[in-house]
Image (cartoon, rainbow, N blue to C red; front, side, top):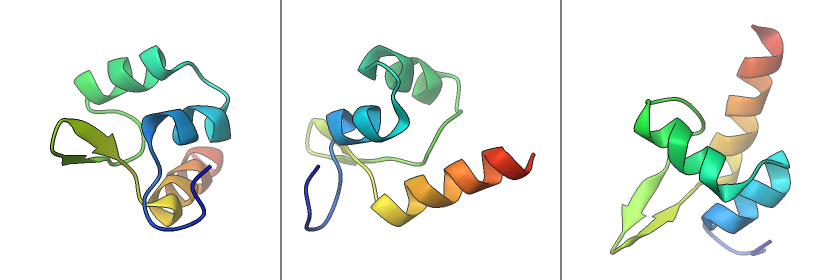
Length: 59
């Protein structure tokens, strides 16, 4: 995973242990950690991903 700044979809996939296809599907149905488009690429704030995981665990 990238140590500085934003995570790629592959970074998030590895962190959550789900395929990248799952992340794309979740985004399409407005589920999953928040992502931002940077050009043609999705980028994730690491703390936002961790926060989303905590919210899911609490639900």
